[in-house]
Image (cartoon, rainbow, N blue to C red; front, side):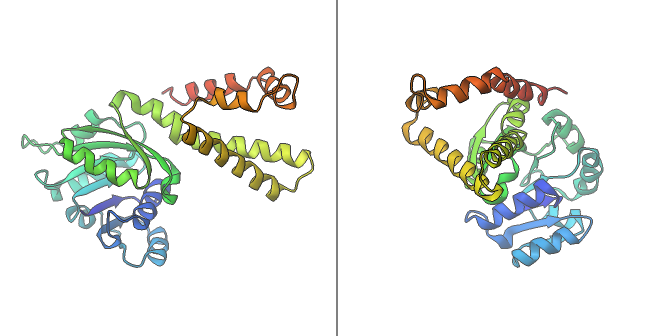
Length: 265
């Protein structure tokens, strides 16, 4: 299978780096196009076998899956550029563009020939570059075999979930925006650690390992977070004092309100 990524910005570049580290798609089968060369050359320097070009059409015509990873205001222009070179009988098109729905994408792809390609909305987060993304996939006109193949690719890059298109906005908030929220917690906990007397780098290392441990516990025990909280919360102890102080400052409410705000259009 060959994949073309149109756009080498934050998300397109992250996808290319993740794919190049995987085993399902050979690096020589990854094509990346971008209007400027600096980002392309950075990819080529790290992964010499990757194919780079400034010509979107040349990248798109050779691929089995064409991934659009451009800014929202560039999508219509890019589709108009590559559409004449696409063969819908053998090629699928995927969009990583936030806020773009399948109906609008399909309308732009329509060649008035009665055939549309299998189409996907793919929402990863930036951790896809390190093969640890949470990725949501919605599809239209795809077979079960095609969906399975795409899930296999993105499961190698973290965890992938096939969802209805209506769940994409919530998934974006929870996982794509959510990685920024998790990082903000790490920053806040680091600042608290510095106030408690640790150097900033040591505080960061402590907080990151603590979060890894929390995730590992949940996965190993297949438990609810509250059950694990109960294990370390003794009556009258330090943990319950800290939790109550955080809740009094609006911790849970702030997280939920942030998620709600990031799903509003």
